[in-house]
Length: 366
Image (cartoon, rainbow, N blue to C red; front, side):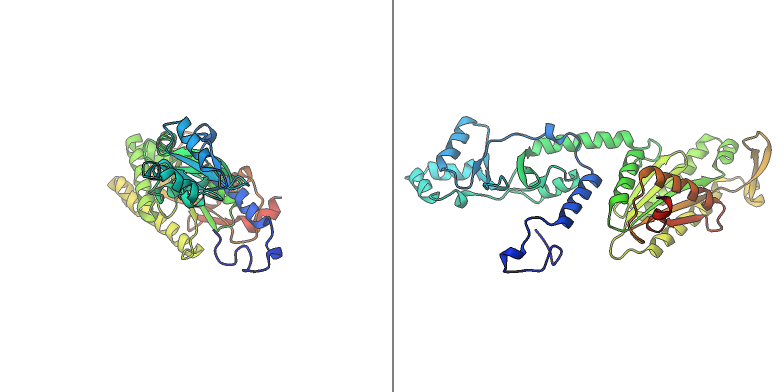
């Protein structure tokens, strides 16, 4: 379960192997905070009686006899960690053969190890995406064992996993923006919370249209909606859903969130943001009348109800990076304040971009 020297270098001296590793516990806690854990997963867990690896085969018989609907029995070590399962079909292949019971008793002298089959296993705090991946790679079984701190908790059947997926899809659908179909504030807030505690390099970007209100007032809300869907399409085609989180805050505000891979870099993401801004600035011109394009502005009322010249619409970006500088200890509210300051700065920038690294500024805010 451990790759390379992440925990420690290989050793044959047992005393050098520690019972606990602080760095692993810290990572586990971080994943529990950041992961998209299934809400109230306990209500889905199916409680299933188990046997221990050194139990008698008669104990297995009794569990199958007590519940005809049970098709397997979890097998645990003495410390309550799952070892695997014993399937009823494997038992039946012996029972229905000549001298089958005697063969089983001989086979299980000293323990049940020779009857045990493997079964997918996940922690109760794992995100649903991880649980589903583990289940998908386990073709031989119709469910997955659930643990907490490596100790057996229960079982999730294939039917229950489908119910969880459906519930999650309903929650996501409620959060989706009806105009663009993109995820909304719940997913954005989850991503920001993850970015705060993550040791990985993360880039978050808020986009806000410039001069959207006068455009909307001048051309009407239908054309305003078309401008919003235009930008959503630009985002989706520029980055793709697999690369990062593409979300719609609401109105003319959008969000991108990256967890950088090995081949990603700040320069690469920055260039992508530049391309998005430039593409929108060019494409939106087709939404203006000839008079607006030739003049480079439209006449509309400002917030004080006074007629004013407004330049053609553009979009500005506020970029927040984490994991590039030192580890930060900022909370969600402070990050939102930082985004607010950056959005103002981006609108007065010649590039329409303002950027800051949380790791560099965290001490100043604390």
